[in-house]
Image (cartoon, rainbow, N blue to C red; front, side, top):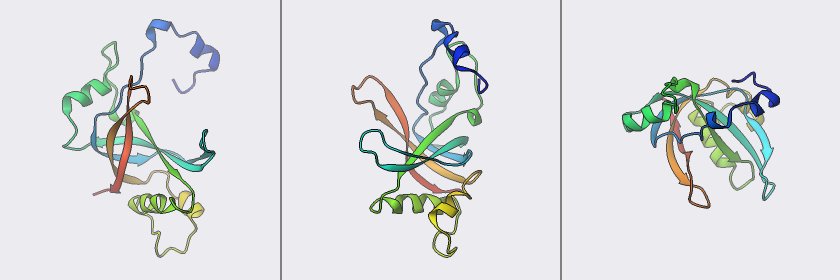
Length: 156
């Protein structure tokens, strides 16, 4: 799927398209996949850093039936949990930067004593492990439910 082109995606049979499912709420062990993305929000043009996390393990507080449903596509094929990802965005404004440094610390990086800038610490995030708490958020029109990272914690 990663090697699909724009043209091959448009050739997908319409009845094969499946709406992504939200991960069940609960605690997960994750690993940071790749370098963080830098960008600006579309509405207020606020700068941000966005991590992509790959799930590694589900915690005991994750409902097993919901997890199985999340991993099963409409044809009954079951994916590995590690094939699923979730995004986590941090705004890089003076008033919200502490959230990013808290996350970096939860990734096991020495924020307080390293003498490194946030930019330098971000370069060290790929493959970092941490735990996240996933919760749900309804879309603005109330027709969909999205999984989102509610909190990060150090990996145990």
